Image (cartoon, rainbow, N blue to C red; front, side, top):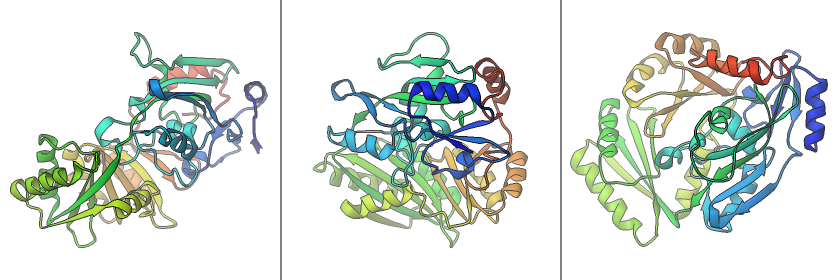
Length: 365
């Protein structure tokens, strides 16, 4: 069963009259958005559009069902962008879906993820009440930060109505450097060196290669006149301070095409599940040891702080993640099981859910 509100009032009426609700947007993350076990889909796609955009204030408010590509286009007209780099934009990801799933792309390395840019939220809770948190003014206030808490909530506390974000000026141009390393320890050493080096990178990713080597991918953004010198200094640093065996510079259209493919998770083969695992660089060797045969394709983003695993067997990965005490969120995969591995913070989330949704209108956490 699927419901499709077109107004706030309709949304409130639907929440009041139904149970086992699952708010959905563009359906780009099926493990989170596909209804199962009798759940009723709450299709938010008709609550769409920019409500307010103030380029001079670097803030906007939009309905939750707004496709992110529409936001990206509106911001680009004023030379602005979403620095946390939401993925699956061209596939139809919505603003509410990005917040509900807490999905940020490779570009989050420099400035942070969704929580660092969301400043306001309105949603309908399980009591059919409109709840507000934050606002358009970019400041920190004392007390509970509801907008940040709702990031990653997966539609369990209520249905987003609209969301407010701060944005940044977009770099005029980009260039990417790929460097190959003989082994994991060497590439992790290079990442550690880059953390303390004077290189302002927008992206710092790590990708295991089929031959056992590892590729470090760094992307720089800024004025086109300054990029050649910056990329040359980065190359010189890697040659002098690390054990890189080869470098490749990717520019212009090739650079844009590369990151469009990364944003779309084009490296994930059809039929495989995609799982996001928060991690730290020092724990990557442990994860690599236990998932090497289980996840044939893997990618580490945000300087090695997020692992993306493409797997065929969710049950086996669940067991492995529990063993190494790492939580996972399934984006592509079978419906009804979005969370695997241990779940830190779930007791707090359940207490908040009890306050916002005491009768269980939305799916359980």
